[in-house]
Image 1: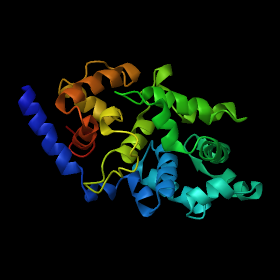
Image 2: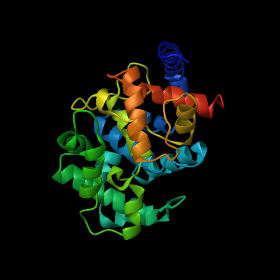
Image 3: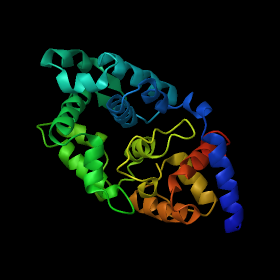
Length: 254
């Protein structure tokens, strides 16, 4: 497929899958249930953290997370008392358990009270062309408090070779414009050109079939290679092609 044909094909698929219908079966539906910036970003961050495995189960457990926080995640983060955290210890999603959930609440409180929130952290450490350094910085800040060693695995670090799929997905949700009713466009301090594709099995396999990616592992090096290819297709909004790659793989078995 020639470059112009490939771009036209992926632009068409991105437009097709980037619609309200996408939300119905996607974890992004949970932050769409909130209206304030902080509630949206906190719910999105927590849901993205557990976004692996069966999508129906992810959505079910994401809703349980919100119930534990009385459907007011920002207020809960800021004002919870120790006794309020006790029910959270019963939460389990695959290897993310109640101990992890409790620490994430405590760490988010630290981020919002001491560092002005998630957007401020990413904006402070963002590079002009990507946010991978900012993801590393967030992880460093996130684990400043005493924490269970096991919990660190639930926040990926590009500097350790991870493609950081879930946190890159969260960033797409926050930064890309809300024009199509899927992403939120909440974070004005960042730009879509800085985003990286949430690289997973579906997007990776389709990217390889289309000649956008040669590396076999879905790791940080593969992400850098895919980023470069997608930026050639659209330098200002490369991650719109996440919809095309994921949709082709997950729904069309491309």
